[in-house]
Length: 48
Image (cartoon, rainbow, N blue to C red; front, side, top):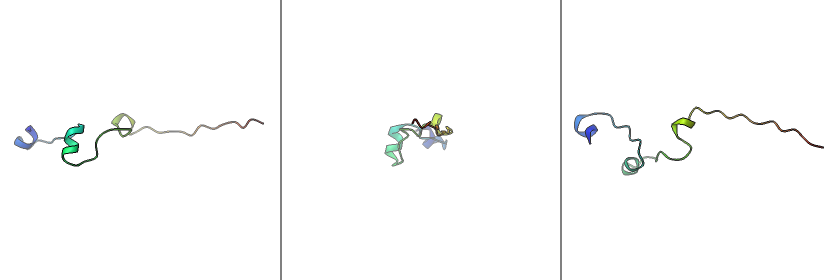
């Protein structure tokens, strides 16, 4: 409510406010701690 009344920025980080305005909800693997994660493929040895 402060953002609307005082012209401040509201980052909409919660589930409820994103559902109300029709945005994709911030849930799942898109969390900030995983955004810059890089994955490497593990090489496997062939067993004869």
